[in-house]
Amino acid sequence: MHDQYLHDVLIIGSGAAGLSLALKLADFAKVAVLSKENLAEGATFYAQGGVSAVLDEADSFESHIEDTLIAGAGLCNPEVVKRVVNNGINSINWLVNLGVDFTRTDDKDPSGNSPYHLHQEGGHSHRRIIHAADATGKAIETKLEAKVRANKNIDLYEHHIAVDLITEDKLSRLGNRCLGAYVFNQDENRVEVFRAKITVLATGGAGKAYLYTSNPDACTGDGIAMAWRIGCRIANMEFIQFHPTCLFHPQAKSFLVSEALRGEGAKLILKNGQRFMSQYDSREELAPRDIVARAIDNEMKRLGLDCVYLDITHHDAEFLKHHFPNIYQRCLSLDLDISREPIPIVPAAHYTCGGVIIDEHGQTDVKGLYAIGEVSCSGLHGANRMASNSLLECVVYAHSAFEHICLHLPNIAPPAELPPWDESRVTDSDEEVVVTHNWEEIRRFMWDYVGIVRTTKRLQRAQHRIRLLQSEITEYYGNFRVSKDLIELRNLAVVASLIIESALSRKESRGLHYSADFPVTDVNEQATNTVLQKIQKKNGNAAA
Image (tube, rainbow, N blue to C red):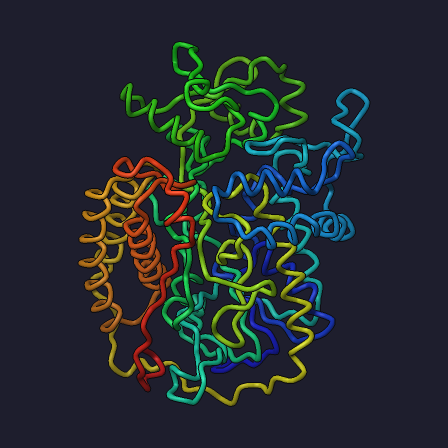
């Protein structure tokens, strides 16, 4: 058993961003990858749609850039958008060379001039979504996992959840460089020290802050909360994307119904078969996700409905089995034949557009700390992420971070031994029910008060509740030994408070943030990012 581990690079998170970076670095550095569940259990694995890139002669970089900027509602960084879009083909080629088996066109079903079948999704003006049937994330993640497991330069630590980042400032040393992390080993039930020259957050988003989400249980905003606690700037947390179409069924927890169905002509309807999207946007079902989710939410509230429906019965079973085999089979397992009847759907929290502010290399405000993927705020997504740009961002920024880390790693000295985790003043909890209750309360009031449509009064209620809960959680955390549930609850409460504070500060409606009190977009004063930063207090307690 080890109390301290030392690596060149510590990567916290094991989705597309983290594993892509680990593979790229493996020939140049000793790498550790932490995964709080099994290696593949994260948002990437469940991503259905695909990766957006310009792969058809009829398409262009300019069009992809323009579509992304429009969807981002004035808050994208144009230079970032251009750089990511221009690197799309290289990213796809890298994945193809890894062996990811993307769906190809066939004689019966050509779609443009690409050898690959391309979907069209909301906000895109062309077919540019390369995919592996309707399980693209699974195809990418499993291929990355196989490669990573076979690489001797990558140490994998499954069932390990980071508790806090360790910085020089936290240890009362000069500077504020990140030196690694305290990590809870769930199998051994103990906190260990991971030292590294470079630490990378690739922890994903925070969908579990909401009662209804397409995200797996691991998405509790850990990286955002840890970065916030050491003084990193966090931006645009009010922009939580709600996926318009999650399967509404008591046995179908978190099952996403891909946007690609709407790209193939699926229509949103009420129970009586009436369509409604034309009342909200001229692009109808192919409007960006914020518009479609808000339309569905409005129809449900207006008519008191539990759900609306997505109808793709104009395609026969053979087409649906070929293009959407997982969705077809999952629905069939619930006695729902989507070639004959519409799919009951509801919106659900899906993607965190804001996060830890990074530069073009993935660097945060703190030396030695990078952030890539959904945990970050790179400037690509602005106020609303366009469909299938997220997996693209993961691979592009993994490469940017790889190049920058390789350049600087030889000049960084390994951190000296760090203080062990201090458990001298805590005991085992006899009140686990507090954790469960607070978790459920946060997710419920975030859904009710900080959801698709917001008001100032609802946000103020949420702010009042989160402050009380954070006080309870801080007291609990200070008195009892850590557990996975407690670590996640503590992080979730931080992220919820950041979402609420950001939403209250934006006195307009823009992109994914819609306020009934301020329904108009302010094109002058508020066309800017919402940036929050914690005021750091000096202390010498290594376990604080």
